[in-house]
Image 1 (cartoon, rainbow, N blue to C red):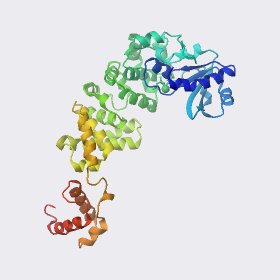
Image 2 (tube, rainbow, N blue to C red):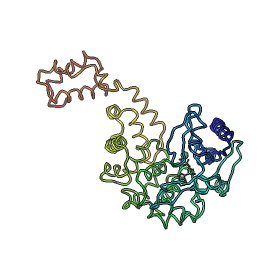
Image 3 (cartoon, rainbow, N blue to C red):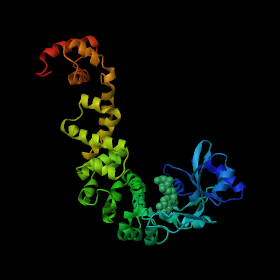
Length: 403
Ligand code: ATP
Ligand code: MG
């Protein structure tokens, strides 16, 4: 068993000592069997939330009414959830209440896909009531039970199916796909926050292109903000090597660029992206045009900053369908070699300029500072206050011409 699970065995043992069943469940068991990086380790137990809270000294109440308690063990958080089924589903969304049940089997049957409905005991034995192992071996996404029923209970599962296609590079089982094609409209009932969370995982998966193709084939894309009229452009996205991108801002920038969206800011606001992400993507889109025109200049690199410049370079390469690790390393080196990295490092200040140039304070000071910055960054003047002042004096006489 992998260390992540071994570390969590004492939680299961303590629950057992108090007479409760407990198992590892969900995504972590799936990822263990697929030899993928293990995310959060979830535990399902017959203990009720108040019993879990009594057994463990450090717990966080995250959703006791849904049966979930976070147990802190050796400083790490583990979600411990009471075996449950879900109550009536309302409006094709997650149910308002849950019903605690006594058996693991019932708990596993309410889960979305067979590969997510596997459990493992503390000895590493797999418990499989839904043929999840077979689907795992055949690399197949299939709902637990009838897909029409399962998607009408919670429509988000349709988008989750596509995001697992992307993340795991699995195929969608035929009936599961048919049901999505029929039920896609139910996604209207799902909150944008849940859609965005799944869509971002879809974009960042290793097989994002397969999933995007399925988005259009099943018509799911029609229920995502700003995509309804963009089928053709979405299909264009398939030819870009999106898997070479790293950060969420990079995916959104490529998406917006390829979709030829007029108003990127409102597009992203409709997806309820955080303001800082929206700001960065808008800036990336603006700078992309500079980059396509004249490649990296020292000043563009300086103004952009290293982190954003690396993001932009990855975006540029994806949009130009190339992969050039060397160019990324070269950019990093060029940045390190810039004479200065911010205005704070400049050897003169606005006050120095006012002392040299006999004019009243005004907007021009900022313009002069930018000029000096450009000269220094481009290596045309040394970043030395004497040299800069001398240059400023000469320059002031010529200003208005070409300085
Ligand atoms: P990830 O690696 O992205 O965390 P995951 O499989 O752990 O993948 P989660 O969203 O963390 O996905 O959900 C944990 C588990 O809860 C799933 O594996 C699945 O068993 C169950 N689950 C999550 N969402 C749903 C849903 N909408 N309907 C039914 N079961 C769900
Ligand atoms: Mg998870």
